[in-house]
Amino acid sequence: MHINQIDFELLRSFCVLAEERHFGRAAKRLNISQPPLSRRIQRLEELLGCRLLERTQRRVELTAAGRVFMTEADALLRQFQHAISDTNSAARGTLGRLVLGFIHSTSYELLPSILSRFRETSPGVELELREMTIQEQQRALLDGSIDVGLLRPLRLPSDIAVSIIYREPFLAVLPSDHPAAARSSVPLQALSDSPFILFPAATSPLFNERILEMCRRAGFTPQVVQEATQIHTVVGLVGAGIGVAIAPATAARFRIATVTCLPIEDALQPVEVAVAWHRKRRTAVVERFVAAARRQGDSGPAPRVSPRRLMD
Image (cartoon, rainbow, N blue to C red):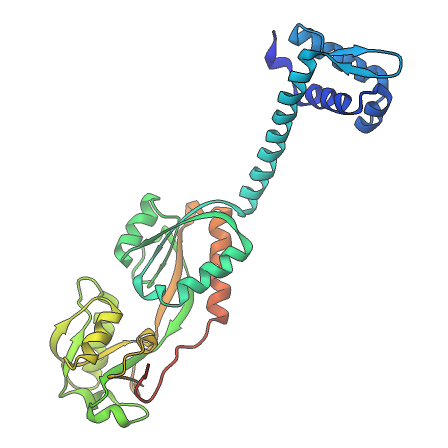
């Protein structure tokens, strides 16, 4: 049997004829005349080495071998069509797999909003989410272990492309009984005598550098009594009365009764969140995710900043 000579045309011709049980109707469906159809069926029987059809003047009947072959041939054609459909979907970025790295601070609202928007356009894409630091995402983007990242764009290698999607200001995070907590906004100098909770340089270099620079410009060096990496930890420590902090506006989303978040009158420029990918690995799925992230960044709500205590 020369199985490699059985092609899509022969299979489809046989399946249509098996459905119609009539050469004239089958030929019409295939948009050919009857003689070419007869030659195709004859060729298929020769390749298989058995009769598939019993021909009469009015009808075509399947042999036992023909009935078996019809079932298998129909499954092959459906699988082939499915393969074509999936291939086209993958080329459009609506099917496939995406490994996404993200920093913890995006998980409160930005990341879920982006994922919801992405799901609307690419429901067939399998997502794998990995919480990672900025440095871990850089390495993972370079070695291909993640496809795209949500991170702070801090001194990224040239092979990594970024698109800024979100900007958020720094806020003063104060215990509710702090003397400045009753204000509508606060100058940093008003915090110069307070103990500080600071993001560590080793794990949060961007926040650490920006906060120290803000304090330096305000004329003081903060009295650091505690360091914490995660924003929710910083807010919790402030609520426990350990000290004050300066944090991105995401901090205002934690509803802790003993914490007040205030705008800073002399803050530096906002911190940014970017979507990042490797320049040489921008697939259709990556493009769709980047587009969803940009749209969400453009329409995302402004951080909720309360000038008074955030109550449950």
